[in-house]
Length: 84
Image (cartoon, rainbow, N blue to C red):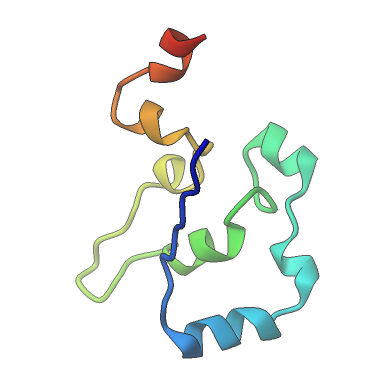
């Protein structure tokens, strides 16, 4: 067994902002996960990337709101099933 630490947001101001948010905005709704809709995991973060940026570029909605994949699936390697 091992311990994995992930620290994606080290900015203390960002952390303070998130901690001051209404906790209900950070909750995952099982129906939203099943229907791939708002309320699924990382909704607040996904909302930050909706719409065009300053250059007019945007992330396509199906990509922005798609289901999370395990890290190994994201790179095309299915090591979990190999280990099973």
